[in-house]
Length: 116
Image (cartoon, rainbow, N blue to C red; front, side, top):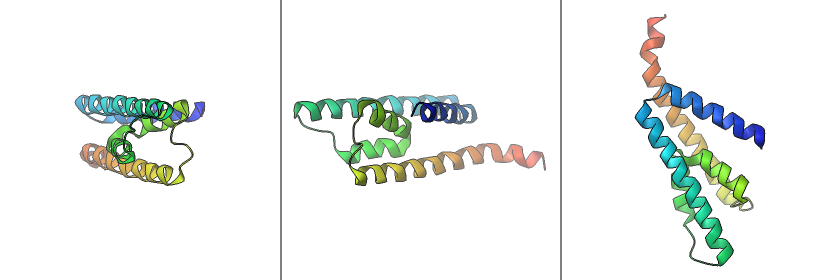
């Protein structure tokens, strides 16, 4: 998993380099919130308290918090056994990656056309 975490950091760095700085800040904030939600949900699960809805965790993954969701799953050992949750998480990862790729393409497309 360590290699995977470094690959994620490299990918995030590449994304941050191609998008506006304010958007990179928002993306970082979303990841911070996502990890804290996983932490709170894991704590609540251990103590038998009210849990955070799975749809909330998945929503934050969809809007860009998937790196933190994966790190939360790995480091907190949370939501690793439920296959339906993992399947939806990976769908969120794919959808978010496609969306970010399209945003980056739209930003860099005029520059690429200049070199043709």
